[in-house]
Length: 409
Image 1: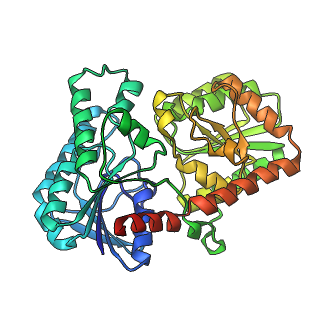
Image 2: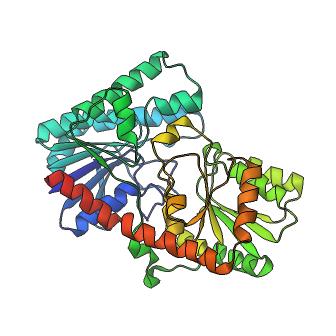
Image 3: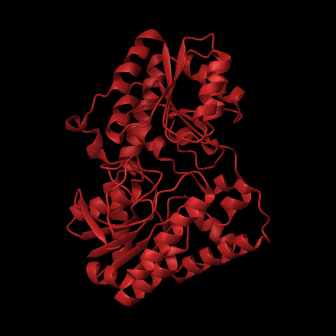
């Protein structure tokens, strides 16, 4: 099969972050399929960017996956610069749609961009190529904007987004989502997909193989903290309000008298404010590190006694959560501090960590103290349970096979 993924923010190990599309495409390539990923040449989620010149398509093969880069401008935190990047991506995609169709000759086209406007170009491309059209749902529009941004459901933008997602779901040959209960949301809105498949996030087992190990400066520094403190509570990922890293840091303030180090690895708009808070409160046991490549992250995670997964309580979490860091912790046999208010709680179901009774800094503090009070054997058992669960349910080889089986059904 020739498979085309459309994902504005897609990336690979060479550039960092944005891996879901890459993992699935790489596994399809291993199985003998020709895989292509159409993406913007600039995305803020990456740690570095590909080099492209001019308006012609730039094709780069990364680990067996052919990335087609559309030349798009860099952007900053200002909304207008982000919108300009999106506009140029849509324009370049539209202008080059026939050339892309001729280059790939797709049998399968998967629209995996988080915002929905590229879908309508992708739909044309799939129809032109007589290809199966897959639409991947990662955000429930417009529910995400209503609950996070506080918009009215009657706002014209909300009505438009609702129409777009309904149209995309109903007109695709197959809808997939990493949200376990997304189908419940569609049903509540009387949106009926032709076919639906729950396809969670996962892990690439190759990254945890001994030959893939990378010992970084960050690893050495966190290793030294292991000798200095009794326990290390760790977090890796974006430093934004949605991830509730501020709650974790405030929990650290509550536990300043304990011999517990708090390690935060990542970048984001809240990082400066968190560092300033720690300086003001004289929290010398909270340590910040810049983002590091995925293979380095996986090694550092092994040093954590417990890994934090958090988020602000949102009604939309009732339809499922699938944070990548959760599975990374599990892969490295690290117990989870699961501070997400969602019925999709694999941590409690598989006894691989602890969950706060309340999703606040105080609740997180209590959960940490509960965890460290457990016998060493129990804490190790939690790590073993998590690794067993993720190997059996979230290996990208199995996830990709599940997708192929549904396509061929």
